[in-house]
Image (tube, rainbow, N blue to C red):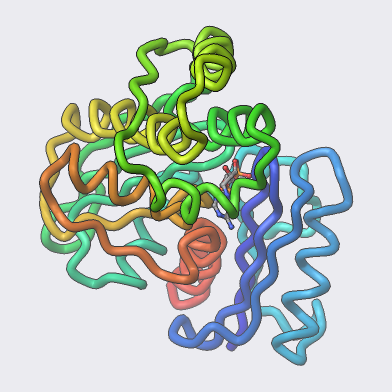
Length: 258
Ligand code: ADP
């Protein structure tokens, strides 16, 4: 039995086809989110990879910021539930899922059985989200994919003290003007995001195993700074950015089994 999960985000559309709730048959990530044809493209790509057609799917569930906009969905599921399900599928011992996406950050606490025990969310401020990294990468003329490698060359991370993205952008520009090395500026930017996310995580209470999902999980600079701020190792998967789509596909599968 095939189910599909689609996660329509602010910057990207992620789609995943799951076989019998156990095996990932196909997945796709398209860098175009809500209000574009990104969702449709991601859906077609994931189906192609799975060697399946829309009619082969037993059920489809949508999640993410733009989930209400996808007409093909049989069901919709909250991002919190999707990330909890997906995080736990990837790491069966997960007790804390930290999702940092393009425009928000969420921390989900799970009990030993994987049920949601609490959560906190920042969807009001770009600081502590992927948006902050996207803006700063733009200032530095770097791609977000490059931030990790540049950060690794830092000898002494710069201090980015502004908590507001707009002010932090000016701070980065003046750091560069005063001769601070680019790797140190990047390390300061990663540490700034990590500090914001760590403050969020501490409000939920951090229980191991800690898992990071969302696009920003791929940025090792942020991940390592977060490990330092929380004092615990953080597990992540190559499917981190697809965790929401995976959770939605699992949700669709659970509904079929009921
Ligand atoms: P959304 O669901 O809101 O679109 P995602 O979970 O897809 O958000 O995450 C998007 C964010 O992830 C971007 O803002 C960017 O900062 C970050 N990101 C995406 N791809 C990468 C990558 N390859 N390396 C580092 N960071 C990335």
